[in-house]
Length: 248
Image 1: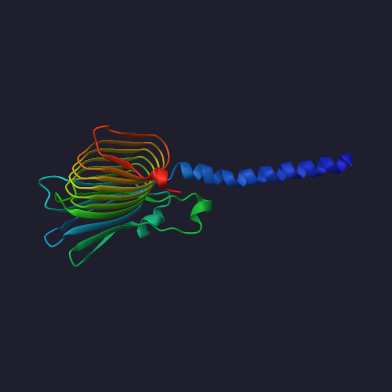
Image 2: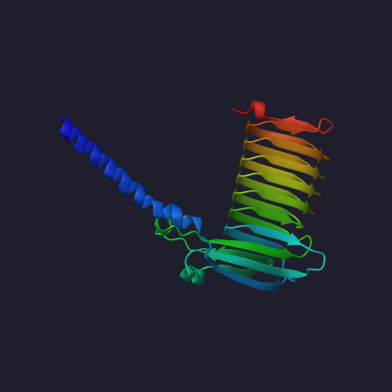
């Protein structure tokens, strides 16, 4: 019986060791996921465009305006472990009516998990001042500044929004969120992560799952419709309503 147990334990250890060894290449390969890079740059006229619509996957995102820019200037850094993947990656665009659609192309295959492949595109877009924008971002840090009315759907990663000439609507999954210097109203539906909002000319409406909430210098009413967990810090002199306690 003891011999049988020793053999069984030895087989179990051997099997576990083989399993761990089979997983090691995935971890090691994932550490160096940007051994092949490519830059893409182009510009697009903005004469007939009223709204910019961006759909970005993995990678950082920067959308901002400068006073001298009267067109869209696009710059992207394509990043992958395997050189052949660069052929399927890129940034594409299409104009429909008065909307410019801009999106990143990142191939995803079943083998990506096992080979450790990890593609990403760091996207930077300069826009004319006050251009309305709709942005869908998958993962990675995002910075948005100088737009008109702004709508953002963000999956994960830090999100910073500043200097917005219109209203702001944000649906954020996870990661810290900062919104500052907005002339219009701000509406946020947030999953998790710290929220910091300051210097808003209109009202602020919040739904938050978890994480602290800090709201300062809002000209109109602040309403928190839902707050799962985390501290709430709102300036005393501001009009503040919380319906969270009345929600099931």
